[in-house]
Image (cartoon, rainbow, N blue to C red; front, side, top):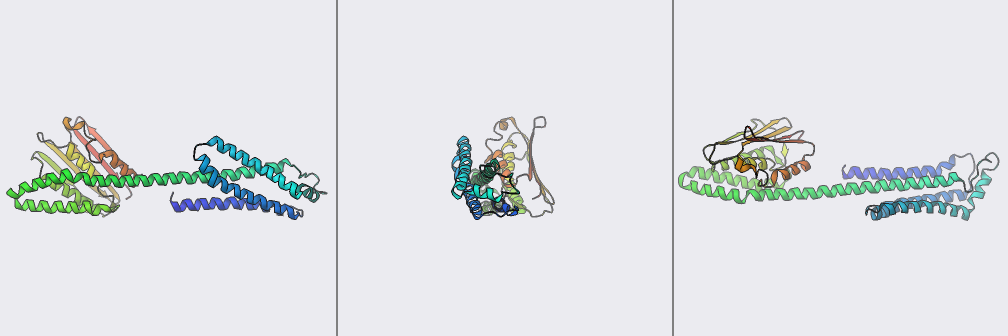
Amino acid sequence: MTLAKLKKLLLSLHFLTFLGMMVLAILPFTWPVHLPGVFWVKECIALLCWAGLFYLNLYVLVPRILYNGRGLLFVLTIFIGVLIMVLFNRAIDAIFNVPALMEKVFDGTHRHIIYKNSPAVNSGIIVITMIIFGISSIIGITKKLNADKANGQNAEKEKVSTELAFLKAQINPHFFFNILHTIYALTDTNIKSARESIYTLSHMMRYVLYDTKNDFTTLEKEIEFVQDYINLMQLRLPDQVQIIFEKPKVLTNIQLAPMLFLPYIENAYKHGISNIYPSYIFIGITQIENTLRLEVRNSIFDEHAANLEDSNGIGLVNTRRRLDLIYPGKYILKEERDEKGREFTIQLMFVQL
């Protein structure tokens, strides 16, 4: 629920509560008798008292007692409030001599009505007071729950932003150091490849430093970043490693949270590559209208299996938390380890982007 909708709901509850109180206050206008002026004075006083109890409970009792887990004290306080309201009503009756005046009003054709100390009067006061306490308690609890939810979401967003910053920092040191070392070696053997690699590296750094500052980037830029990552990693891979990257030939340039693909691709490079045995990585990105799908498959080896999750940058678990916050109910993530085929697969699908 958005903040605007919450405010609208709470204001409507305030309005409906006091509208109901006003209806009860003016209901005696429908009686077929002429009521004395002191009765209406009493009605106004009662209305003010109920309004006072409403806001006392909403802004004092609920936050300071109920929120602090003192439920028994809260119930006792409500009971005392109802009792005080009943006694106060009787005191007003005594001060203004309301029962005697009302008995004169109902004398004659309404002899069966006895106003003085009437159980109906006391029951009405109790019921209305309990309703006032109940509605104000509901409003107070709803506000607290929504405030807690908003605070939790803000804290989670800050945490996700920190994790994204950590992810950017994580690919900087080792990745860039190794790539620069490889490019340095290329300057002695292949000047053209060294120049192209420097350009690709600068393109990646520009994306990491500037484009990821925003909450969203474009699918095209994210795919370009993945392609640059693959190109640079290719410089350091042995010949027996096969890399397959399939991407949409025609794509709709939808908005996407930056660097969501990298943890899964990085995971494949860390755990799917062997310097001894033939190995492979398959990266496939497909798009059908507003549905986007990432599939990463890689070979697995026993020496990598134990650390499949622990060494994966911000980790697959943290990446899932980013997905839960940014795309709640709009993504499907599947992870599968095929021991027989010696293959690890991750499928990430976004719907209704």
